Length: 202
Image 1 (cartoon, one colour):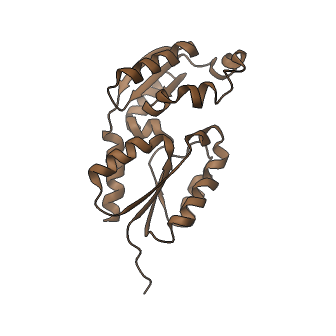
Image 2: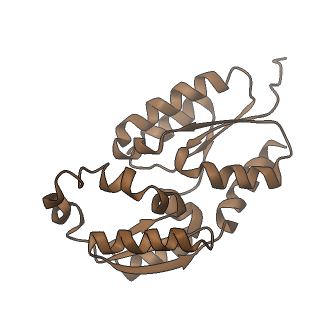
Image 3: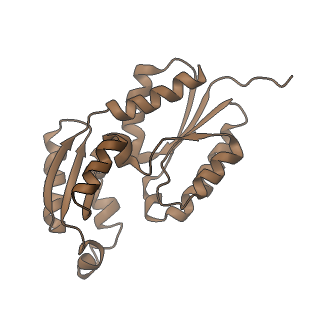
């Protein structure tokens, strides 16, 4: 009979680090090994699946249950192929916006206005690094209409009530020339998903 490996191995996007750690501190019932990949991989989503596979190879040596803190995130199904190799489970949904707002709430937002650009707390904090410089707009501002010409609003999905982050989100909307809205999500929808992970591994 094969030996049962204890604990949970989780590899997740660095954009979820603060929120995932917060939820695990509240719900940590079993040993968890936690690895984070750079959030900038989202600018090259074709690299996400292989990066996750590398971490899962290592985590699978010592952990019986494997979870992945990503959605499909633009991998075109390649990430799900990797999960099947390791019998791993990922977060439900296509991206972190759905994790934080809840799938139904996000679908409603998307239907309200197709041309919506979203920020989370992490993306509001890292807008300059991941979006403005990440897309080269600091060097080539003339590309702004090419990237954002079809967007009409920016929705800040706020996990916390932080005036500094809201100021950053408003500034991002101004720089992109988009109408600004804030929707408070808290951590409840995300925490519920992580809680189901932990319960399935108990």
